[in-house]
Amino acid sequence: MVFLNHGSYGACPKPVFAAYQNWQKKLENQPVQFLAEDIYKYLQQARTNLGNFIGCNADDVFFVRNPTTAINTIIRSLDIEPKYEVLSTDHEYGALIRAWDWFQDAKGYRFVQQDIPLPATSHESFVEHFWKGVTKRTKIIFISQITSSTGLIFPVAEICKRARTNGILTIIDGAHVPGHMPLNIRELDPDVYTGACHKWLSAPKGSTFLYVKKNLQDRVKPLVVSWGKVEDSSPSSFIYENQYQGTSDPSAFLAVSDAIKFQQNNDWESVKKRCRDLTRSTRDRFYEIINTNPICPNSEEWLGQMASVEVPNVDNMELKKELMSKYNIEIPVFPWKNKIFLRFSFNAYNDETDADKLIIALRDMIP
Image 1 (cartoon, rainbow, N blue to C red):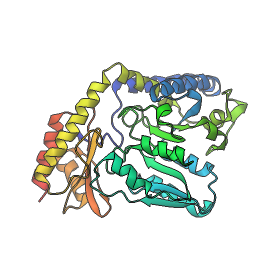
Image 2 (cartoon, rainbow, N blue to C red; image 1 turned 45 degrees about the horizontal axis):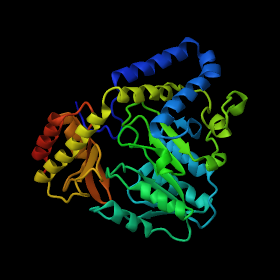
Image 3 (cartoon, rainbow, N blue to C red; image 1 turned 45 degrees about the vertical axis):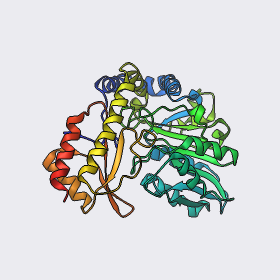
Image 4 (spheres, rainbow, N blue to C red; image 1 turned 60 degrees about the horizontal axis):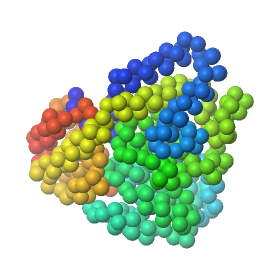
């Protein structure tokens, strides 16, 4: 299979998957000891390793299954005064747009999606345009650092800086960031940040983190109320109420340390650079055969290891099915803002041969 969809799930390296299975075996060997006693020290170590990797304190972050769970936890926890606004963009992940929409009537806030016109030009112009959406009622900014549909890198550092100056809370969807581009939460200084470890860090599926700044942690309530402090000796309610919410297999969380170690021991910076270069060169090849306009400059300012291109005059589901059935290519093709986009993403297991197969297939299929 030509797998060009690492942006959705990706592949777990064999050593990391073996570590994941070892944790599962350890759990099954003595589940009572594991889940009633040992799990808390294991999670502490995993949070410490993760914190060192993403630049935050271990007691300011806990594991959840996915970014959707993380953002739902935050939305449900925050008391947003009626008629205040949550400012976002029209490039956000659909499930999270739905989550913000879902709660706005009950909580009384207004969810505003600022239009981000394409093609994008520069990060500076992006910030100026986005900031035009800020009003006296804007109390929260929710924005992706790397967008899912369009694959664009947004300049969230400057957004966070301006928001702090204006007393606006920042919630960053960094689902595509860990293992994809450098992340130092202390330097970025958001109020809330969530990142998926099972995407570009290539940890086992169902491993994500939620970071919350210290002064907001007492406002974050668990989605599921469980034993909390009765069993967990962690130093704060933020940790002991949120990190254990009933019986589940925590092996994916614990294997995040192994995913970090794998990348650190395998010159992953060179891997990422090769994939970024392949992304940009492949995008150039697209526009030799497809007559649509690029959505951003072909630069590392905007693009990492994935890119989206508009594909004209096609049925997205038919194109996706035919790429799989006829060419054995796994790649997302989807509607976005009344247009059809194809998003390709590269990681360590991809090379120019995969890009060649995609270009050849599209040359045969696209009118």
